[in-house]
Length: 112
Length: 120
Image 1 (cartoon, each protein chain N blue to C red):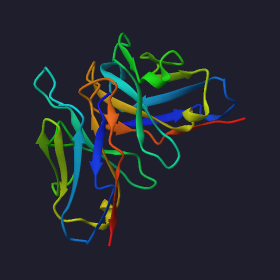
Image 2 (image 1 turned 90 degrees about the vertical axis):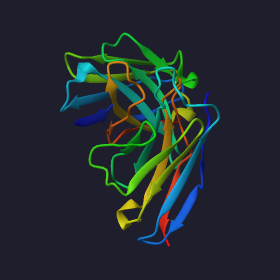
Image 3 (image 1 turned 135 degrees about the vertical axis):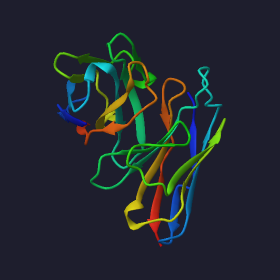
Image 4 (image 1 turned 180 degrees about the horizontal axis):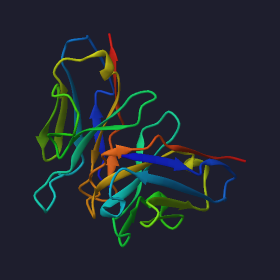
């Protein structure tokens, strides 16, 4: 199975400042069809899980442009350009290139 | 898009349970559907996926032979039949809309989950 490793596991940030979460996979997520199936999800208390980014860098419908994704191969990053109070929660990366699909451990974003 | 899970509850080790997910707001039969679970206080674990037609299914190794994913496209319903349940199956089970037909990598809409507790 592909192991997804996120860093940091906890990230205290100041409102209005940027935040960055790293996700590393144990093998390349490049699929034979030419796509790289790496997604980012957000889990906020009392809210359904929310897809933010798919295929490395594509923002899902309704996701603010302060969220961006980048990376290739085995190294990926989620960036929030200016953190807002509503961004508090846990962020997960997920690979959909190989079965079983697997998630990172989660990164808790907190406000300082 | 709305996904409403049901069927969770307390079950003894070795017992069985059937989870259901009622889907609406999209053409159900065109999309793969996924089950993901989250143990209390833990992260997410992908469990199983089924293609839009129901012809293809995949499972995480820890549930193979014990869980069966299925769907009824005439009822816009997704199911997860769970048997030989173990304490480590205790979790909130989410129904997730995936991508078109066999696109299992997409996980774009999530339900609120149904809680399964395996305990004597």
